Image (cartoon, rainbow, N blue to C red; front, side):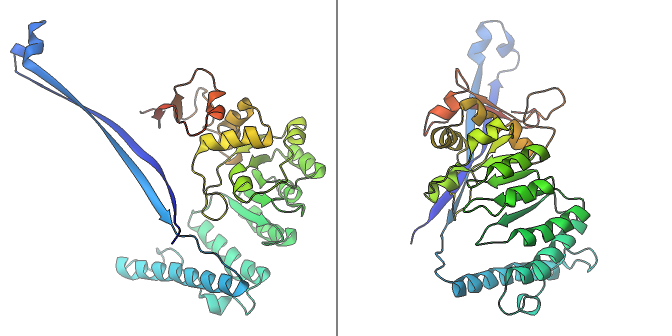
Length: 323
């Protein structure tokens, strides 16, 4: 059995304790003889072991899709029964797979019977902050993505798109037409797509982990994006199928070595432009009024973050203004 491990540091706590003899410990100089201090450090790590499954044909894909879909539906039903929640207050239960998906389980049927109803229900519960899609020959065609984006627009939700990863179907141009927050992967992006993204302010999200894992050879058009002033963000794309990478520093290194991005572009790609790609306006920069979510690095120059491999010079992390 082959397993992949995903994980990282969740919490890093420092504790301190002081014991002293009342009165005597407060005497200048000599008081140190009557008190003691102890310090401790506690690290909490999360490790998730994943057993990848290789699907060799459409029958296996359909079988595992239905089994996992049924499992999620069963969890929802059990939750409703155990919690004894009222019907109107309970989260919506997924429809029965066989009842709502016709034979053949094609992409249009999936959109009509699963995707759009689930999106509408989830939005009604306040559970959606953006709508993402995968426009590719092995996934959904541009006209199918457009149907989903039309509903997202009606609901007032921003959109994102995985586009031009394996071929050029015009997905990035389509995303730009809907004012997408970002178009991701974009290895096969052409000049028209770059121009459309520039006009729309759509961020180009580069995913070197997937490029490396899948042994791709077509690099994204970094120089054209740069020339057209398209914001470039970076992400790990962490997933067990095509990018089992958990290191943002390695992502930065790969962006520089594989795609010839500069260290400054890489750093901006995981901070300011990354926030822009998520539609977040209160983080990504150290400015007045922004959230104090910071990483303090023990380096002499920002370029060191992209240069070294297998090295983590993190000195401290600040969340909401607290260490």
